[in-house]
Length: 341
Image 1 (cartoon, rainbow, N blue to C red):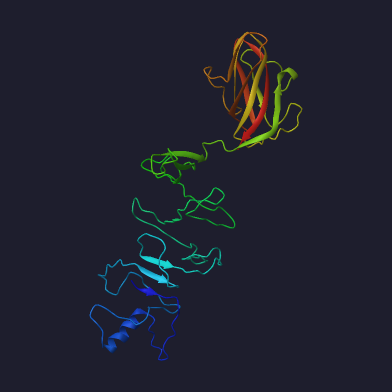
Image 2: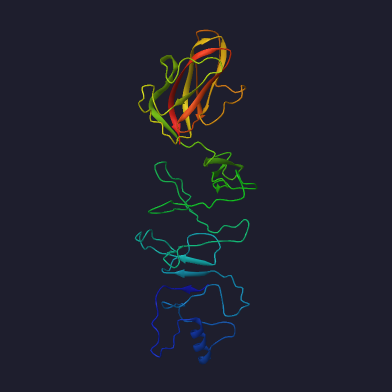
């Protein structure tokens, strides 16, 4: 193993640089004395002045296939992590100062080279970059859990996943718990253990967000009444096979409910009252055709009943449709509880 310190050497006054490897070999060849075939003994660590290149794990001989790790140290301390590597940088106690964070290895992009650190592999089961946190002590619940990878961005996303243009839904093949996948439709999937106590056991895909999901629920401070046919809002009593459009953005008095126009779905309570005969009712998005008669959100059998059902339905521009089927008639009341976006 070759130790390369972080001090710079001053070129000799005869302007014959010895900081590059060719220069060193040339001087040793001229001296001749004490040189052994196949080995070069140096009295001090190899160093390089600014502007010169250090080649690690590589020799002048093109047949050299040595993979002996090379360590750059700025303090005489040993490595504190395990794992084979071609290059190890060991940093001593230098404090936590630095921008953005002090680190053993820093990669900084600029105008001509925009990426700070790049890692890639051509192996199916390999990783382009590996980050590990080897802290394994039991921490109390009041402390932060160890984190292997931190991403910092002052403006913009912390992390960017490149969409996979081949698959929609969970990826085929094996996956490890903790992996994230962004499929062809832009849906984000997380692989989680089936048994949380066994992170190395069987795993399953859990959809986090994406186009097939309705988004996050926003609960309104209180339920808001959007329709009441007893008051003629938006119309009067529904007859056989009757249908109305309900604007969830407005209360029956015209005031806003808090539901936004770009909501994907809403949680509502649909009540039929003052019933006659028998029938069923359902709600669906205002931009859809009525579903088949095999679908309903509730049913009634008898006169002068009140039947309520709470459920989630898609909406379009904050609007839904309510229809009834069967031979009966009824009044309809709609209260909105929250919306998804």
